[in-house]
Image 1 (cartoon, rainbow, N blue to C red):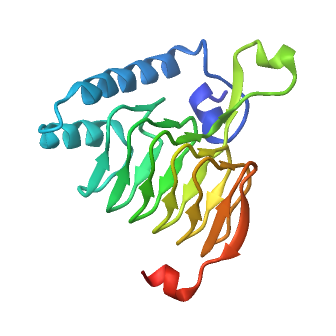
Image 2 (image 1 turned 60 degrees about the vertical axis):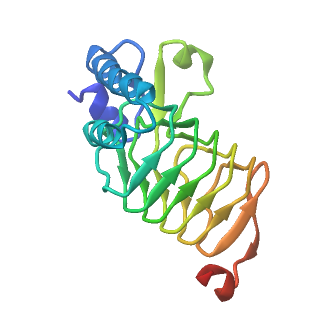
Image 3 (image 1 turned 90 degrees about the vertical axis):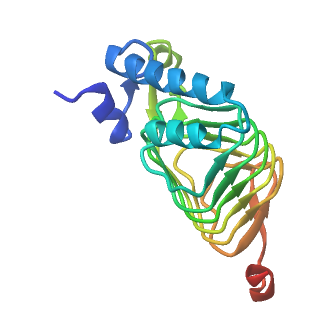
Length: 192
């Protein structure tokens, strides 16, 4: 029989609200996040240590401006040269993979979690989680929401206020609600 954590990893409905293992995992993450968010801006070494304890994988060149919030932390993998402005929220019931040289504006939400449309199933506390992948050299503007199962390709720019509901191909500028590709980026824009 699969555990609720195993069901989540496979994208199946799982009990996120009443399963003790997942509740304990979230409690651990929230304790680390609480400590992280209270550190002085001058305590950069301590901040990085806490992020290394919290996140599944991250490099040294990592800045996440507090406050920061996530569900588990261990499902988040971040490559080198990452910067996130204030109020980043990552609901990481599934894997969130972020490439190198990614910049994220303030108030961005990355949600792997979703809930069934059927109210009888939903009120049982069941949800699903689908992985999110953000490629290399992506710039995500402020107040963007990224929904479950989305992949954003390399060298994309996601305009402020966008709600990303579908995959965004590489080398594009995408904006809106729902987020849509408006044009391809030129080679000169990509190199700048």
